[in-house]
Amino acid sequence: MPLDIDILLPQRDLLGECPLWDMRSRSLYWIDGRAQAVRRHVPATGAVSEWIAPGHIGSIALCESGGLLLALESSFALLDVDTGAFEPFGDTVTHPGERMRLNDGRTDRQGRFVVGSMTMGRHESIGELYQLTPEGRVHVLDRGIQLANATCFSPDGRWLYFADSMTKQVRRYPYDPATGAAGPAELLVDTTPYGSAPDGATVDAEGHLWIALVLAGKLARFRPDGTLERTIDFAPDAFITCPCFGGPALDTIYLTSISNSGNLLLSDNPDAGGVFVIRGTGVRGIEEARFDDRRLATRATRT
Image 1 (cartoon, rainbow, N blue to C red):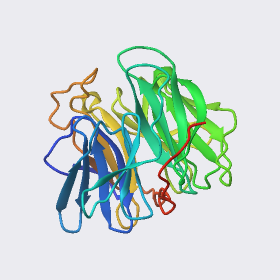
Image 2 (cartoon, one colour; image 1 turned 45 degrees about the vertical axis):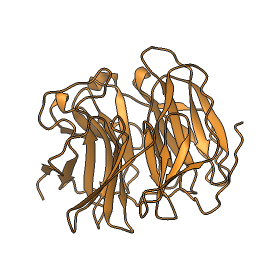
Image 3 (cartoon, rainbow, N blue to C red; image 1 turned 90 degrees about the horizontal axis):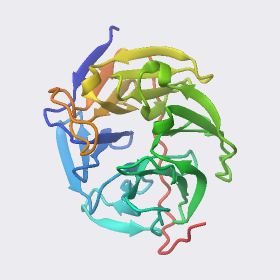
Image 4 (cartoon, rainbow, N blue to C red; image 1 turned 90 degrees about the vertical axis):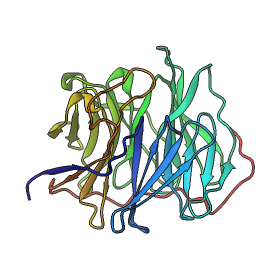
């Protein structure tokens, strides 16, 4: 099957990020972080839904309840997609400095949510990588981060992938699925030769890592050893941001993009801000892990 690339909908996002395919409802969720919007599209019917959050959204996660977990600027909330109600969850994050927010995140295979933070408008490596447990507690996994991105897990859950985009380095941490403990990071991919910092990422069923090279306009597939396997090219000013696998057979890639980030990235490209739909790669993904919100807590502690 030849490679086929379309755009999902006519509407364009300002800051499209974090696409997630929900196998239960056969629908695609994603966010426009700058518009504070969570969006859903059901391919079988064409139905589109939107929820406006109480603040900037860095990332989202599917929940066991059927709702969504939202990482806001410094807190978490649960969205009931049936009623549209937002409910605060856990404690707020105390950022180490001013003008910071939560950014990219992903759920591990045991239902914990791992999300990193970023500094805004300056180059200062004081961000942190957090782990939110189903009980609502927040643990710090790493420090010294400027712009958290590319968070995802190997299919067996034993590797945590993560990038500080400003370093152009994708790291991997040995990860204990039972305890959620992360070991020391090691370099997996340096994206400098590819002309871009890494943005969002996902893994496929073969354990390969797909990374959006936002400034180069390339979606790159890396082998588990960090070597490049292939790229899919887009216009550099389409500003592609984050991929996910979806569709009933998990063989379609959905890829978000930016039209106006409100900071550095602004594009007149008519495709910028669209959700790209890629078919014909010959690769399948794995089902997205869900945050285990069945054990709700009203109070959490930060360690």
